[in-house]
Length: 514
Image (cartoon, rainbow, N blue to C red; front, side):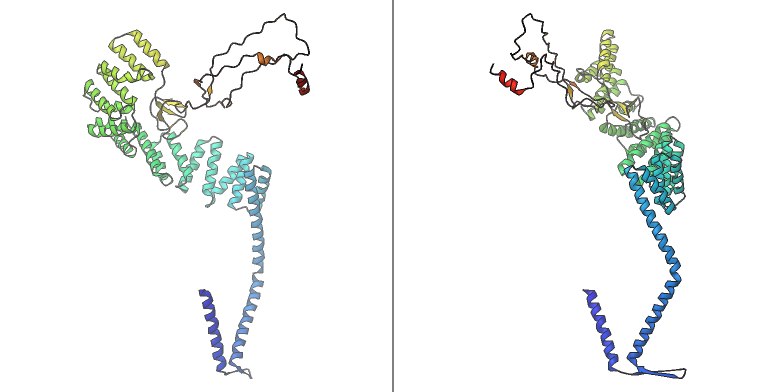
């Protein structure tokens, strides 16, 4: 609307100006080289405008002629670029479709038409990878590293190629260079962190984690930093106790429920004469995750305490999270050290009907210490061998006697305190274990054969009916490498009949009236 108004106002102004000039006629006289030209003001104005337009047109023609070589060259370059773009598009689509022949052909065409194009280099590298030509792929990635806009892409390609040929040093160098170029690149930061952790370079791992801070969620960053601080504190435990104490206290501040950090912090604070602070840290960690390491550190808060005082302390700790097996075991172990056998037996009584290995082993220790009854000791040890497992530090199918910051597969904070294979439940198909049904064996008879025209009974009719299946009791658990059985069990095989029934429906109908 505003544009229309402005247009109308402009037209009105021009019309008013033209009318004003027409109402005031005048004469324009030009004398030049003996010639005199006289005309009106309106005609002179139109002549000036026409002359200006002619000059502009003439200049455009001259400029087009002068720039024609450049324009022709630009046209050919544009056509070449379009062909290169189309070749790159065909190649990338062929790579996605798995067509190696088309991909290699398109890569060669793109390299010829657009030799310096980043996408052409990427297509060349990916087609070489697809063909298994690692040397060509590595050359393409190295060419990318020489360009500012494709340096990170080339470094990632070199990193992947180094991993494929099992060259960890080259992969680490590529990842470190990528971190220098782009500190916020997630894959490079994670790779550097993994390599530093594998080499137990905890200080370097902390630096790598700081570079990754912007790419991680805050809880994830705090947890990983706490694990790395705890690992470094453990490494310095026997070398620099003061530094170890400072590191583990920072770790506990970031992750109060981290068991190894809380246990180590409790021991370090107890050694430095700060039992109250140690008690607070251990009780917080115990409330979040009851663990025997925490109980052990809690028992040694005061080095000069007697066994009865440690028992009272363990009972107080166990009451903070009632109903936990770890608290019961800690109380029973402290009672055994204090020779309070009745207290130990009372604590373990609810778990004796189905004891775990640690419960049965502890009962064997109680029997041996209190009575020295070798028979009862052997009985409990035998039950321990058949008892269910206890939680242990587990990661990637590997069990460790102590906590480790990195799993066998190189995963940071991979170890968990759990029963091995506890994730295998009973909500699976089950094997029917119904008792076998005795099948009578038909003895040969001396009776004559029935007439041929009499329909012979099927052997299936003489087979006894299958009894009702009982409730299945053995869970069918698939092994990790076993694809498992079919969803349904095959029915029992039916013995073949000696004389199969006739397939002629008319014959069966006639036999009904005989």
